Amino acid sequence: MPHAMESSPPAPARFVDGYLPALLALASRLISGEFHEVVRQHGFSVSEWRVMASLADGDPISIGELAQVTVTKQPTVTRLLDRMESKGQVERLPHPSDRRITLVRITPQGSRTIERLIGLAREHESRVLAPFGLARAEELKKTLRQIIDLHTGRPGPGAAADASADAEAGTGTDAADAGSVLG
Image: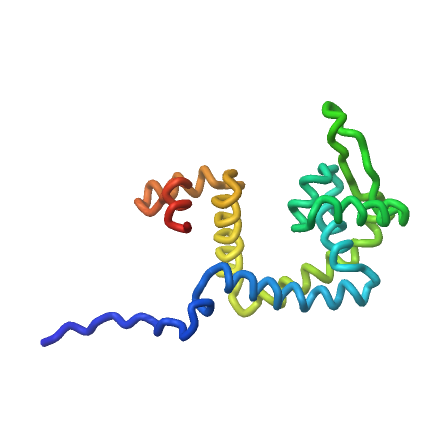
């Protein structure tokens, strides 16, 4: 009697329909686009929202790091900070040990201004992830953080614990192997 072969899902008709970078970009555009409308309705540009959300925890960061986190060119961030500083939303500070670096942090006024939008962002995220359930949503975030960590060359939070668990299960790869597989 022939053995039943395990069927795999049909291959996508177009390459981009199964290509991870294209899927990530499309998902980001769709999900972010929904929330960006809310941002604009509250009187912020998308760039201002990204800066304020990145600074919301109150810790100062360098302009270079802010540019990286907001996926914005550094000269654009500098001009944006000029406007936001004039509104009292952010402030620039000298770096304590490196005079070449300027740090930026949100002001108390900026924190009050962005507080409502952060709540709305959390509600939006909950609606987006609700169909997947808590466990799948957390696994998705964990996987995305791992992808980011692999491609930025830095171990993320819990990376050592994840690697240890993977090693015990015999499923892990080191970053160099993963990098060559991901291409």
